[in-house]
Amino acid sequence: MLQEFNKYIEEHELIHGKGKILLAVSGGIDSMVMSHLFLTSGIPVSVAHCNFKLRGKESDMDEGFVRSFASKHKINFHTVSFDTSGYAAEKGISIQMAARELRYRWFEEIRSVNVYESIALAHNLNDNVETFLINLTRGTGIAGLTGMKPRFNYLIRPLLYASRNAITDYSVQNKIRYREDRTNSDVKYVRNKLRHSIIPLFRELNPSFDMTITETADRLEEIHEIISSYIEGIRKNSVKVKNNMLIFSTHELKKAISGNAVLFELFRPYGLSAAQIDELKKIIKSNSGHQLLTRTHCITKNRDEIIVTPADHLAPDDFMADNLSNLRKFPGIISVLSKNVGKGFRIPDSTTVACIDAEKIIFPLLIRKWNAGDFFFPLGMRSRKKLSDYFIDRKYSLPEKERQLILESDGKIVWVIGERIDNRFRITPATKKALIIEFERK
Image (cartoon, rainbow, N blue to C red; front, top):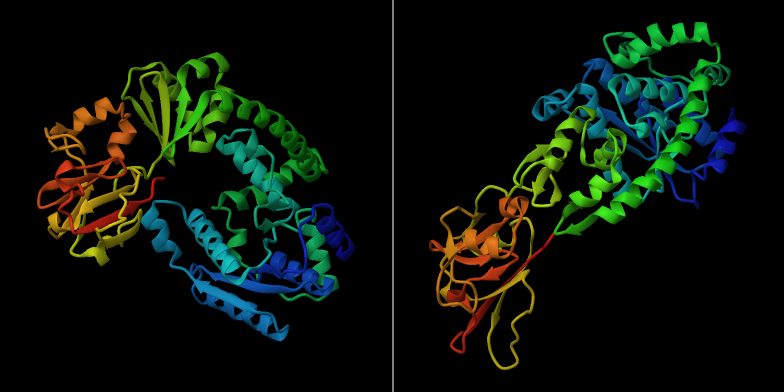
């Protein structure tokens, strides 16, 4: 198995250079076998262990076991404890999904801080088959049937070639100690029900069932590459990007899309589920203003366009700043400078930078979402203008209106952030000190 391990790493180019690999080690048989293989191969590693606090003392014993293993082999050891149940309740997700989000986020933090080359996960061939079937039963696009990848960004899976039986045999031959998770036999979990009850029936029909599924997933991966190339061609011709928004031309969409499959693959990266396809088709044909919320994005019809924005595009709650130091803390503000106005002073030529008369500012300053009755005096104008009319003149889409922020002082709009300052706060020949605020345009 050691020879196969090194061959798999080489064939799939899982390790580059001589950087350390961070091993994700639970203490179970798969991760302990993976650790043994890395150590035997002489590859420099560190170990990371997550304690999800889901099995009481057993979870703590798992952590102690992995800690002892790392200490015995003089390996750097990282560990963390999570309130997994609390996180799942807060986010409204399953325990399994909560554990997945928490561990991958933490793994990446450890990797980037310590400059590890990759994070090694101990998924095996059987895990890959189970994932294929889970995705199939839940409904998925073709990408969900291509299986796990040997490498995905900084994640590597060097045991993906090995069956669970092969891993067990290797552990016996090399007397590898490991911890057994009793929940692995609990069939109330979907993966365990597949593993213990359903897949054995498939193996009765086809003794090579696991390899058959793996080969099918490999072929689907090749087909997925062809489809992805086609989808990217459509996306290139029908999409433009503006201020963190994707804008699809409905004219181009109607030309390119004849059925649900292409539409689903085109919008799947934006959280669209298969059940939302019909609703999306209706929105494409509807009038302006209709919206569809996916798991991750908001899809809006605006004239002859479909606008896709992140689901967190709505403006944050009101933010009050009592001084310049507090103002710098608002998300999106890059810098806040107070500068004397004198010979050689130049006003920055950018809509993302507000250059205003500091002496006309009254603290506290307020950053908030705009309201329907808001008005201001656009720079260069002496008459006031409703923000709603300003947005119409600027041809704002609904998502752009929803996320627009304003900076307010003493009840007066100072700056339509990222757009235009109010004429009342402009720099004049009498200005002695300027307040320069730079905002990051996403």
